[in-house]
Length: 271
Image 1 (cartoon, rainbow, N blue to C red):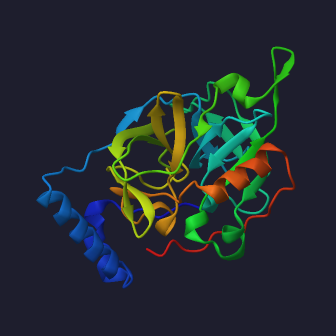
Image 2: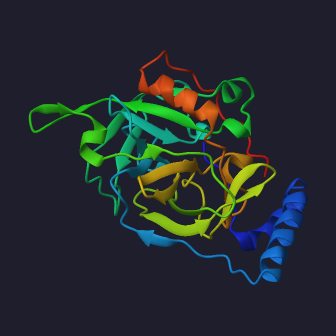
């Protein structure tokens, strides 16, 4: 399922149709006023041909359109991905990941998801604070030998908890059949306890896109588009769940090939 993210200019139209959007519009206006008062300007994302560690997620091998985004996380078996929990239904088995996808091309092939691991809070009640999922993917035969996805693409480390004002780069794939990824350098702030960033263009399909922090020890994943309102109600503001102790525990289960979970069908995004 996709997080429904309206273009910023469409919020006004949504008010006439969706009463809950009134509170959202008030929040957006207040946020815009705060930015203006601080002399800030919301950046706009740019298209990119992508990076090997980040890719598009398809519902299955026969699916023509990608629906979410995921990234490769360093793990002992070299087979773990990170995405948003609301991108997964059921076992997740059979979903397809295309790393480095661009112009309708999958330069590093298609990798089949074998299992999903999610937080107890998401499994019980779709708690937006637990909107993350770790997926495992099957190895492939390449050049006559079996290889893992991490051997082909490389991987990011799972990073520490975010701080307000931290600089990040976000990558995501707008939903479609051959859409390229978009990227944006921006900074983190918090909304009702949820990590947040402002950058235009993060629409349906970018859910699960990694928030990357560049450190002296390499690039780490410190968030994924998801969380509050399944990632956000407008394309200019996006959220994440905190990848803290619970996320580390779920990652450990996926990395050790523990028993998999069955994800509930995602409900509405509250927009």
